[in-house]
Image 1 (cartoon, rainbow, N blue to C red):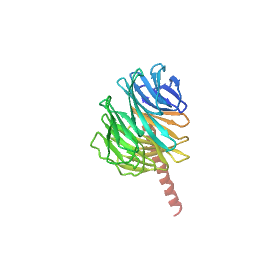
Image 2: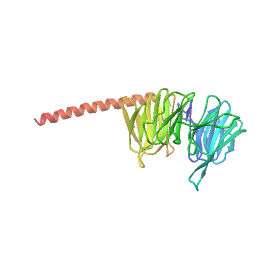
Image 3: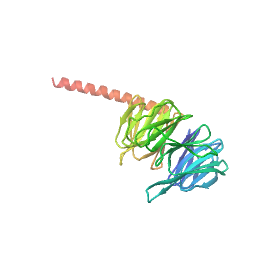
Image 4: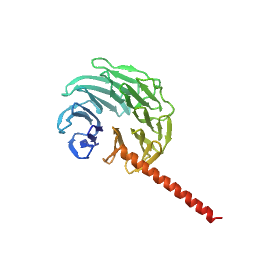
Length: 328
């Protein structure tokens, strides 16, 4: 995650590190019981969910301030205005599914303020501008929940009854939810649901008026145009109006960049996360490596590749003409 001048990353083993995003210098490192599943930043503190706990860390020093055990495995964490929200879920082996989830609300000192228990796992979680939380639900109810402090959760249906599989915030008060049937639903705007794909939405990202979604069948939809690649899409993001998608076909990883032209990059490990902010992009793979890119450098390199391709096309045309002359 990129936050201002800081770059945060967590590992399956429970190592959380902070780097200077401009120089790459390590600022601090903390170890907790892993795996780490989420981050949030508020009031110079980093909050992270890991294994069955929620942790608060001083963003400047890396000091572990407090930890709170949650019920089940921890999932998401969000923080704003001195309040911390987290979710945890319980998986039942006998039914091979999640049987309940708990939404927690703490103050910045780690005092529990409220908790809500629901009968399904949320597959998307974020905070609403009105001070509450929004959750995209899987089975059995599907749809989404809105939770306000001091109130019971309110359930809302969407145009599709398909389970939510992913989501993102597209503006301050608009959320996009991806579904198992390929539909993308919009909450808080007049944007119509997109149902042109019938493959499960694995990830979705939005920036200004740009929208990109990745699907289980290897399709990538960006601004109404569909691209098809081999494998399944693991992660998508947007960088300077270009779409980025990582795919995995069981043995090989490929990064696809969609813009005025389409470029592909092979990678030697599966990519687990891509996150962009302020024209910067960080990519994390399953070998624990991070790759930090700036939009201007990417744009220049892609332009150089285009010039090389043009030169190669010109050389191919010249060689073809020479062959024609020799064959006369």
